Amino acid sequence: MSQARFEEWIGENKISEVECLVADMSGTARGKILPPKKFLKGIRSRGLRIPEEVFTLTISGRFVSETRAVSDSAIDIYMHPDVDTIRFVPWYAEPTAQVICDAFHLNDEPVDISPRHVLRRVLQLYRDKGWKPVIAPELEFYLVKKNIDPDYPLDAAVGRSGRKEPGGQAYGIDAANDFDPIVEDIYDYCEAQELDVDTLSHESGPAQLEINFNHGDPLELADQVFLFKRTVRQAALKHDMYATFMAKPHENEPGSSMHIHQSVLDLKSGKNVFAGRDGKPSKLFLNHIGGLQRYLAAALPLFAPNVNSYRRLVPDSDAPTNVHWAIDNRTVSLRVPSSDPANLRLENRVPGADANPYLAFAASLACGYLGMIERIKPSDPVEGSAYRYAHTLPISLDEAIDKLNYTKPLKTALGDKFVEAYSDVKFQEMQHFRRVISSWEREYLLLNV
Image 1 (cartoon, rainbow, N blue to C red):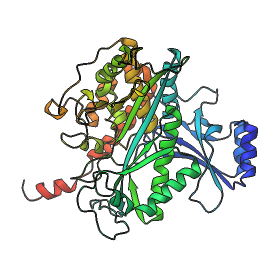
Image 2: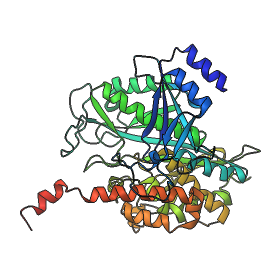
Image 3: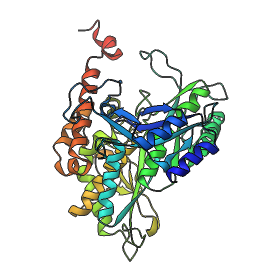
Image 4: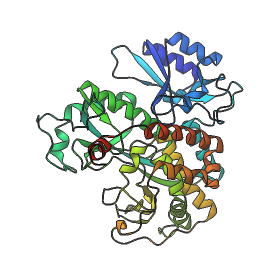
C-alpha cells in the first residue's frame, strides 16, 4: 500500500481518528491519537514526534532516570507508520484506524532501542545468510473477574453457566463453550483487523484459553500478537471481566506461555533448511538447536521479562526449567514436533505470555542463528521427563539480566545499545519491586519473628 493508498484508505473508510502505535520494552502500546488530516500531514513532515524516552518506560509507567542508551532526553524522534499495518479498531463506535509505526531519529537513522527495530535487525542477519525464518506463536491467557484491589488474589472469571470451573479442563469443549460470547467477540475483532488466528482451545487452568496463530513472517506475526493482546483485553472488558497475559496470575494453577514454533527457509529455493535431502534433520537444524541450548539462559530476560515470570518456570508445572531438547516431549524447553520434512520445526517452550513478541521472537531467532553460524552441536535428545535433570535456567530476573550482559555474541546480535537500555529498564523495575511488602511477608512474619 503506497502513501497515496494510505490517504485513499482513510478517505474510503471515513476514518475519524488514527491511533499511531509503537511497542515499548514491555510490549505496551504507546503513541499518539490524531485526526486524519494531522496524521497525513505528520507523515509528510516527520511530524509524528514522541520522545525517545518512551522506549525506557518501566512497566509501572516511570521513565528510567539515568541511562546512557538515550543520549539526550530532550531530543524527539519521529514515528513512521508502516503502511502495511493499517487496520480498523473494531471496538470503537466511531470509525477509527490503528497503524504500527517504526521509530526514527531526525537524521532518519532507526531508533535501535525500539523493539520492532531489534526484530528487524535479527531478520536482516538471516537475510544476509540467504535464509528466511518462519514462526508460529501459541499464546495462552486467563479470563479473570475484575480485580480492583491489587492486594487481593485474582479469581477466575465465570462463563455462561454462572459457575466457576471445577479444576482443570484442558481441551474441554464445553468449558471453552462456556465463554462463547467473549470468544465470538475475539474472533470478530480479529477478523475485522485481519489477524490470522487459527484454533482456540481451553488450557489446564480455570478460564485459561489458548489461541494458535498460523505460521508466517516473524515481523508480521509480532505485529499481530501485539495487536491481539490489546484485542483480547478489550473483548474481556466488554463482558465485564479482565483478560491477563501475566505469566503466573494464579498461585496454584499453570502459568501462561507463548510457545514459538520456528523454522528457516532458503531464500532462493524456499525449501526448509532444517531438513536434509534425505528428509532427515540437517546439520543446520541441529546447530539451530545447539545455539538455543547455549544462549537460552542469556536470552531469558526477553522470554521471562518480569519478576512474576519466574514463578511460572518451576518443575512439574507445564513449563521448562533447563535447556534440554527432545522429540515430541513437552517437559523440555526445545521440542521437535513430529512432522514431515517440509514442516520440520522447533518449538521454543520457554517464553511466557507476558513477553514482548518483538523481543521474544528476536531473541529466539538470534539464539538459533548464532548456533547456525557458530556450528554449535546440541546435546543428545532426552528420553522421559526433563524435570529429573537440574534446573539450569536462571531463577530470577536479576540472574537472567546478568547472564545477558555477560554474553557478548547475543548482545551483538540484538544490539549493545538495546541491551543496555533494556537492562536499565529492568533494573529500575526490580528496584521498585523490592520496595513492595507482600501479603506472604505479612502472613508469616508479622507475629512470628
